[in-house]
Image (cartoon, rainbow, N blue to C red; front, top):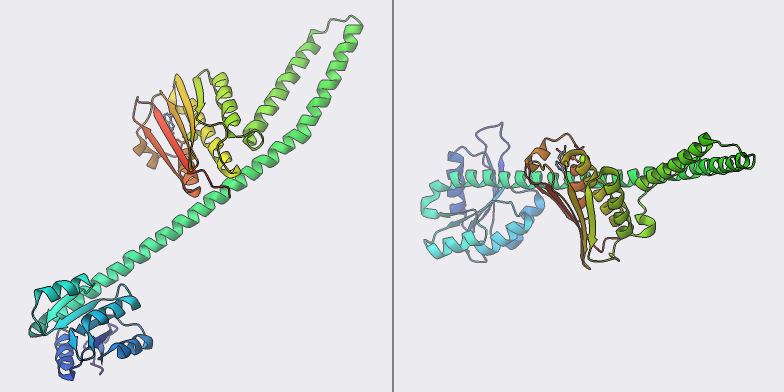
Length: 365
Ligand SMILES: Nc1ncnc2c1ncn2[C@@H]1O[C@H](COP(=O)(O)OP(=O)(O)O)[C@@H](O)[C@H]1O
Ligand SMILES: [Mg+2]
């Protein structure tokens, strides 16, 4: 039966009424129309009828009688919620039993209405439709958020690997082009120094040139090291040892490295990520911390690898990270999530700072 809508602007509510009595159905729909609800209501009385109605198109709400000759409200409720978990279902019953009402609500009914109090049906239906719309909107928002987080994760991962590729390319260009020329230059200069020595000419400038070439070779190695973590060749532990030692030498900050395992079970990308994290954290210590001491610790179990970098510097309020223009720590948090792990900053003004970065050990992708 189609009940004409009072308002032509609002799309009618498609209402499925599970009810064996034609008379009760008419009473119910008349009551709802009197409330001003634009309806398209249809009556079914069993499971087959419900299934057919769902197959014909989306239903906005179900009102079900409790006790019917071939069906009952619990079965109707189950069927409706299986079709759409957000679908509002209201149980309409001739019986007045608190147990029944509680059971219906527990089974997922949105409301329970007595046939003797049908005037409640309109407001209850309106409220349930609104609640369902909110549930759907919440679900859609959560799904959209999950999707955009996933996209951000993919993007970060892509950027990270693009960055590593680019660094590797620059490192090998420095190695092949500049490295080869430096070797040749040193060779020629050593030969020149020998020649001058044989002619007993004292040439302090040539000695100075040799020193400079030595420094240049050292600088070029350092740059290559930074661009392409030696971790890929020598293993993470050695790479971190080298990183921490050269940090101490360069900055004068007392720096130590400890680990519980020499052979952390790690994939190449996880090792590279941990190395980059230590690099960023140490860069932050030299840029921001004014620290005297910093410790880097690597703890590895079969399941998890954690890196902890702790300094005794000026610290900061981690709340400020939300508005900080820097990207170092932000990228680091994303990197942890991208690898299925987590990262945490704990700090307070004048309390130093500790960064924890933890990822599953088995990731080799
Ligand atoms: N070890 C540290 N000690 C004190 N402050 C720090 C430390 N590490 C980070 N910070 C603070 O957190 C901010 C954000 O760091 P980061 O995201 O790496 O960005 P950036 O280093 O480019 O400023 C820094 O600007 C600094 O204020
Ligand atoms: Mg930084």
